[in-house]
Image (cartoon, rainbow, N blue to C red):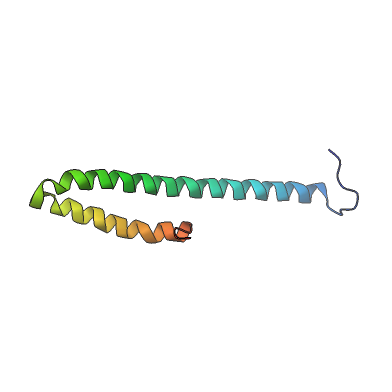
Length: 85
């Protein structure tokens, strides 16, 4: 591959740009992984919520804990991505 002769860029600058692009890609991938994990946890909480709600008053502490955790996760998810478009 040849460098465009109209560009006044050093090989060092190109290397730094490439490294920056790799870091951005890795950060975006980590963000997607985190959001997917949060959504996976939320799906698991829904399953637990369904099972526990059948137990009546015994399950109320668990249901409250699930609700509290969901309320803590929602703002984090909204900060990471645009949830509502």
